Length: 160
Ligand SMILES: [Zn+2]
Image 1: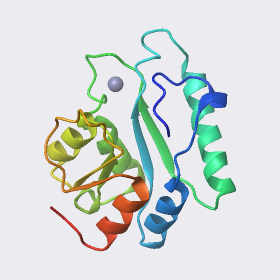
Image 2 (image 1 turned 120 degrees about the horizontal axis):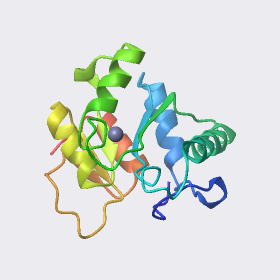
Image 3 (image 1 turned 45 degrees about the horizontal axis):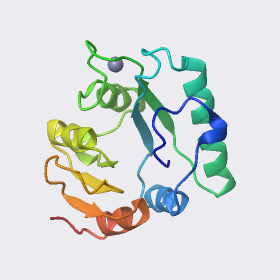
C-alpha cells in the first residue's frame, strides 16, 4: 500500500500499481503471500485492533477485485518489549508454523530497513522495493523500484 503513515482507516488506503499482478505471479509460482506488518499505532492509541482488521479486509477486497489475494495477515500492535515487531522474527515464525511453510523457501519483499533486517535475521533473501532515497539498511538480495519488478526479477533468479 501507499505509505501514508499510521493507517487506521480503510478509506485512506491506496494499493500501489502492479501489486495485484505481482501477487498473481507469486501465486502462480507456488508461493503463499503473507503480510507481516508493524502497527504500533494500536499501542499508541491512534487506532484499534478492529481498525487494523478492517484495513486488511479492505486491502484483501481490493486485491480480489483485481484477481489477486494474500493468504494471511499478521501484525504487531506493540511499541516495544515483544518479539513480533519487525525486524524481530516472531510473526514470521508464527506464520511458518501456522501455515506449515518451509522457512528456507521464503522471501521477504519490503520497503523498509526493518524488512531487510528481518530477512537478514532469518537468513532468507530480502527484496527491497519502493525504498526511499534515504534507505540505509543492509544490502538486499535484490532492489527494485516496484513490487511487480522485484517479483519478476526474483522469480527469474536475479540476485545481487
Ligand atoms: Zn509485537
